[in-house]
Each structure stands twice: as C-alpha cells, then as structure tokens.
Image (cartoon, rainbow, N blue to C red; front, side):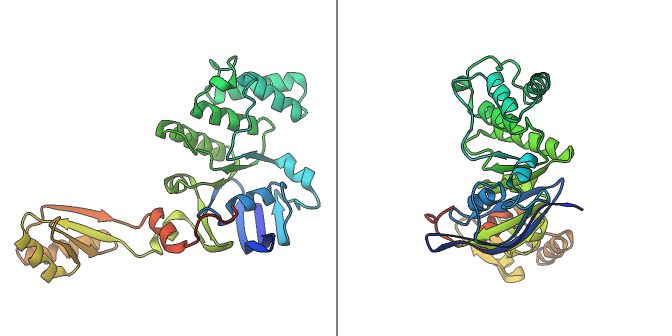
Length: 310
C-alpha cells in the first residue's frame, strides 16, 4: 500500500529542549492514523512539521511523496489542515467562508460555486449558509471548519483535536464524516485527547511520550499488549465471596462483595472460571468482563507531565 506519510528519525528541539527525539512511522494512504500522547508529548509539533508550518532539526520526512522542506508547495497542494482552533471568519456567512477558501485555492469561479454548494450539502449546512458564522453552534462551526479544509479536495487531512469541546451528538456526526472521507480514499492523520475517538476511527495508532514513540499498532494490538484484563464477580453474601476467593483466587472487595479475577475475558477462560465456582457450589450474583481499553494503554505507556511544549 502506498504511504501518504513517511517519517524516519524525525528530531526537533526548542530552545535546547528536545521535543521530538528521533521518531519513525508510516501512514498508509486511505487510512486513519492516530497520534496519541499527553500534553507536551510532541503531537502538535509533529503535525506542524508535516504540514510545512515549521522546520525540523534532523531526519527524513515525506508527505504525499514530497519533501516538506524542498517542496513545500507540492506538499500544501496535497494536504488540508483542520487545526485545534477554528479558522472561520465570524463576520462572514457559512457560504462566504467557503467561497473565500475557494478563491484562496484558485478555483475558477464556476467551479468554486459548485464546490461550495456540494460542501454545504455534504455537511448539512444548507439552511445556515446565509447566516453569520458567529451564530453557529460548536458542532456547526467544526463542520464548517472541516468543509473549508476540503474545498481543494486534499488527499491527506490533518485533524488536530477535531472534536474538542463538542457534545456527544456532534462528536459522532464528525466521526461519521471522517469515516466517509476515508471510504472515499482520503487519508486522515488524527491527534486527539479522546481515546474513544481513536479507538472508533483509527486503523493504526502511535503513542508519543516525551518526544519518543513508545508504541505503535492497531487498537486491538495495543490493547492486547497491556495487562489488566479481569472478570469481576459479585456475590450476595460475604461467605460466598470468601469461598470464591479461596477457590479461584483474585482480589476481594469486602465492602462491595466483589472479587476481581485476572483473565483475558475469553470464552474458554470464562467457562473454566464458572466451572470451578460451580464445582465448589458457589453462586455468583453478577459477572462483568473488563478488557484493557485505550485508557489502560495510555496510562500504562505514558508518564510525561503536562506543561512541556506540545
């Protein structure tokens, strides 16, 4: 599969402080790649380098097959950037914001009008097209912001915290939009603090901490690599809890009458656990399975404190 982004040994420092300490990754075209990490890990710096906004100190970078240092115009022609903060002009209407972007992309007037109409329809902004952007809700503003990014039909889009501050309904609408873009062959490079968002959207995830990549893989690969899976058993009486702890081990919570038993949560493991309890004549009131999620991955792999450059 063709790579939309290739990074090898990327390094960047600010005022003597290392922000990126030599990172390597590849983003296949037509996929969603999520870069995760705590504040100060280097996520935004990475996006700024890849989108030609700032330079770098060492390593090799290719974006859409081009060198962002030697061929910045070629890179910019192929990418779109939806930053953490909106690029919308509040004094203009939704339609005027899109038309301005069409002019900046040097689209012929007729083509620009057609593209504006398509995007207003695609992002459900037709009714709001003639209203000032200052009157838009947070979700509408974010949709307009992304629509502006798409005016020039980029094949690679950088989304930096795309759903920050949105309510759950608006966030899910944005997720649907991202999935539709990828289905059309667009590559998405995503940075986000919402781990559920990365789990929902990303084909591959890289975890950045202290300027270094500490893990990379599919969401399932990363979750499988983290300990913490368990079965939580709930009992009706303290006697049953004590007997279960003696029969199968685990960590008991006397106040909650619950027992936490390490397990991968698979069918075979559950059958074995329940068979042992049944053989001991112990009744279980309730059972729940916890598999490691991206929160567990994040907390296990990252330790950088906030306050460093992003």
